[in-house]
Image (tube, rainbow over all chains, first blue to last red; front, side):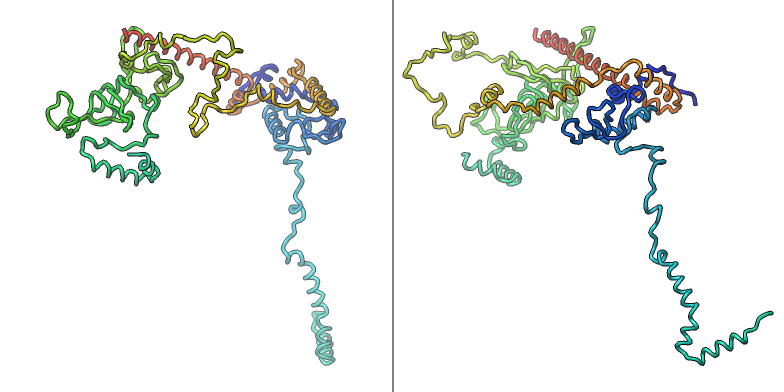
Length: 163
Length: 336
């Protein structure tokens, strides 16, 4: 496919939606201005407009300048124009698209599934059964008496082997 | 019938009301029977916007045996919301001798049937650039704007063709009212007979006292005597509020500082930096749908769209103005 645009920097800037242009006018991107990724005072020079900051005098936490919805809108718009990395860090370190997918924490249930009860008690039950089988003869002897014990011993002696 | 009985009739449900009206009709001789369906007073047409046509209008019939013919409105029949036209079906009607017209010599006459204004279309005459005239029948008319009509002596709505609002259909000229011996000429009626010298001194005698010019035994208060406070009155009546506290003043100051510290203009190098990044991205685009999207959301496009809309609006205004002028010319020519 042929390429559809052949734009200079200024022409390309004209293609940006007004919403994004206004945002970058107020908050110039990274090399011109740095933004904190943590909560700061609201009047700090590196205050992040996406994060709830503290009031310098009262110390109360203020709502972020851009709400979660508006910052998401801006980010997605910037992503379409290839300048998403120029945006400040979002609230709660929010990510979108591939980046979000890659950084996603696995669910607890996926990491260690609970399983059915028969699955959870399987090993324990098998152990109990094998133990019981191992000492089955002792139990039978106890119940049936010394005559049975002697028979077992005789069988042991009479067992035929190939050697 | 007195209000005592008709009042009861109005409170009855519709089917009962119809039944009683039919009963009343049956007891009458045919000449006195009401034509068409009875329409209660509150649903009768009173304004020209409701009628859409007035006496003297040319109309085209779209229903009935006269469908397609062009006739003239002779009058309005308010109690059935219908109109009399010069081309109309007739039905024989027996008229008692007391009601005979001057040249009538038999009981049976052909009485014209009325038509609903919904079954006719207003016909208007327009003029082409070269001066030739042609007729149009308006599918529907709408009303936008008002003007004072010298002949009707009242404000009349401007009648326009629906979806072609620049075409104005002027109202027909009413028959001039003839003055009788008791009529007052307009210059006498408009003459000012009293001029006040001062607004501080009253000219009536000191012992003259009157509460109101209205009927003292009237039950309801007069509807225009509304006690309405205007904006200025409210300002005067409102006590001054508590002055702003120091905290609030500090807040205002802080707001001002924030507003001032905000960057309103983007510097050229930031623009260059962002633009180069965007150009790098967009110049690799091969999807035509994405190109269309970019062109639609761009700030440029929005500005152009607003400018285009403004231009279209101006053009439409101009068209309407021209049509108004043209129609005025036609009405003037037809009057002469």
